[in-house]
Image (cartoon, rainbow over all chains, first blue to last red; front, side, top):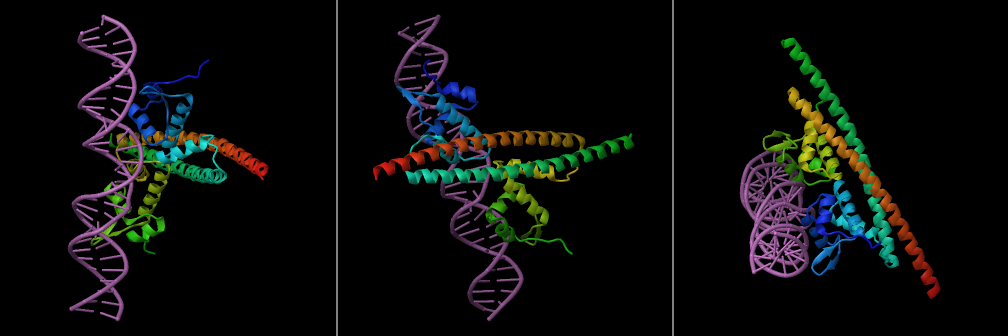
Length: 133
Length: 133
DNA sequence: AGGCAGGTTGACGTGTGCGTCAAGCAATGA
DNA sequence: TCATTGCTTGACGCACACGTCAACCTGCCT
């Protein structure tokens, strides 16, 4: 049961992104796949990182922020100072996520009122057309 | 009780953005403040729109998406077709927000495990130092 | 009259996140 | 042997979201 590997286009297909994007993420230090000669060979771990990137992007994280997340997720045993700064970054991210939750709740409320008004406007339109007949 | 108004720098200070950004949002059609001569005069409504923009940005919306939200929020009585497309857009946004909620929950879980590993690594470090003493 | 604070319109610059060629290597099948 | 498929590295281009001048107007204070 040798650990599974993927080609760049495997991942591109599966995650619905372009190979260009994947290479760009590597350029930016978010990935560092193995090589077989020139070819990039991706591990399941790389795939997890890619999914993390995509999730991050969906909620508006920059690639730099995604890279930090990946580094946090890494079992990179750093020194004590680094570990403390990692914990601080984790706390920061958590706060950001909480703010985003609030923002999303607020947005949902606004969509509710927008929808109501939309429906009311539609009812008015229909009434107008009935009268016009 | 005349309705309150704001200068561009009033809003910039209060919302902690630059005047340049505010003008840019206007350029992109997200705002259309009154004028007194050359000067822009902002209404409470404009301020609401600005807050909506900032909320949108925090959860990764593009300015174009924010503009759509503002338009949805507007009591712009359109024709029936427009109203239906507005309802469709609202439904779309809601789906997107739900996805983002899932993404955020997942991120929080990942931060949890990252934190755990971080703490464990710290404990190891401390133990090592105790032995070294 | 002079000067400053605050506003205005360009216009160009910048960082991010890729898209889009171009040119080339490497294995594979007809 | 030749062509196709899939991968590679540049290198340039581009849209977005502003930052950063420059030059100018305008009201108000002294």
